[in-house]
Image (cartoon, protein in one colour):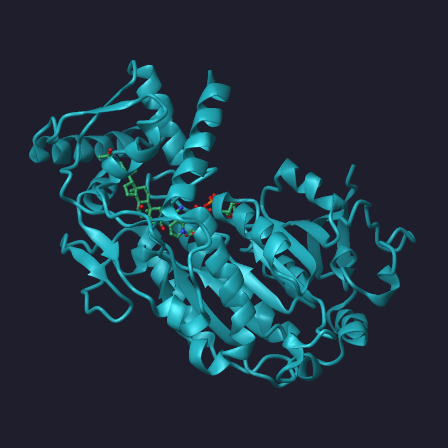
Length: 440
Ligand SMILES: NC(=O)C1=CN([C@@H]2O[C@H](COP(=O)(O)OP(=O)(O)OC[C@H]3O[C@@H](n4cnc5c(N)ncnc54)[C@H](O)[C@@H]3O)[C@@H](O)[C@H]2O)C=CC1
Ligand SMILES: C[C@H](CCCC(C)(C)O)[C@H]1CC[C@H]2[C@@H]3[C@H](O)CC4=CC(=O)CC[C@]4(C)[C@H]3CC[C@]12C
């Protein structure tokens, strides 16, 4: 069992850390570090003061300048790297964590930072890579700084994904914007040079005017106008990340950043898909079409999004000049369909049927119901949280074509989807079936 403990350094740096260290628990200062732990690897389980913290890590890794020598990454002598994944216990974060463990040969230590740590992290402790679970909050600058210190690469995927009105706009801003600012500042202060940010298609659109974005790419001109707190926060955070590219980090070298913009992610662990499945089961196996089949909604498989993060993080060092400050849509071979028709690719084989070749309700009635839901949410807020799937924002997103067609990630860092559409579909169906049966 992992031991949870408060970690203090200089009285300022505090983060709740659960050390899961290659099969054993690391308790700082108690002589229980993993074998060979004296080198300082995985020192985040016991945070010394910032400057001291750089010492042991640099002793084992050399100076930052050293490990960045051209060609070194390819050599057999390449240093093992420390990765930090914020939001590593979320839907996407878990896939990124597992993908790094499977596909990043240079991984020496993996720090998983999240507000809520998943029990599945336990199973990772048997592997060869040191996995350090850190319970922390991205809105707490000192917790972020403690987690980032000594990491070579940060994949910042933590975020508050809320388009249903569960959280206040202030909280969404705090987590998504201030949290990202804290990550950037932590990189700058501690000398971490490589930052990959999980942005979203939502930073582009659909916009408030309902303009379609049809098979667009990163250079497509589109009027990005937002009002909802979630896309506003993601757009602001993305800008912070891109503007931070080139900033001098502790040690004098430049920060290299890029942002990945997934469209709607699906796959194992996708809660909204599971909710639709359960809703269909409750309705006797039927779902009712609300959106015209002609409205295309971009979707991408979570395993491919995770793979893109791993590749981008790996290649940022070698291709800093090309990739630094760039944005990349996440894409794969998933077909272009409406949101509901796409979901039926998985829910159909699980026994559900989508009723209606056309929407059963006229659009004006959906708009009315969405507005009614928004009103009810506002009226009931002092008493209870009413947060249905249908609201004016989700209706507008679902009802506006937004699809991407690009190869920028392939051109810039050699990305090819790891999972074919058939694989992605099969994996998702198996997960929906399992998640559905465990719900009954
Ligand atoms: N789900 C989707 O379709 C899409 C998601 N994204 C982005 O991908 C990222 C991951 O999203 P999902 O995995 O879907 O969401 P998720 O909610 O499953 O995962 C987010 C993770 O961040 C953690 N987190 C939230 N607030 C935190 C805080 N204050 N401090 C530390 N950790 C915190 C959560 O505990 C959670 O584990 C987000 O940044 C989101 O904006 C982008 C495009 C599409
Ligand atoms: C919940 C919506 C579908 C309900 C439609 C209804 C009520 C008519 O049946 C989802 C439709 C589109 C989704 C969003 C989209 O995939 C883009 C996103 C990107 C993100 O970064 C976060 C999630 C989301 C906003 C996603 C949320 C659910 C939908 C609005």
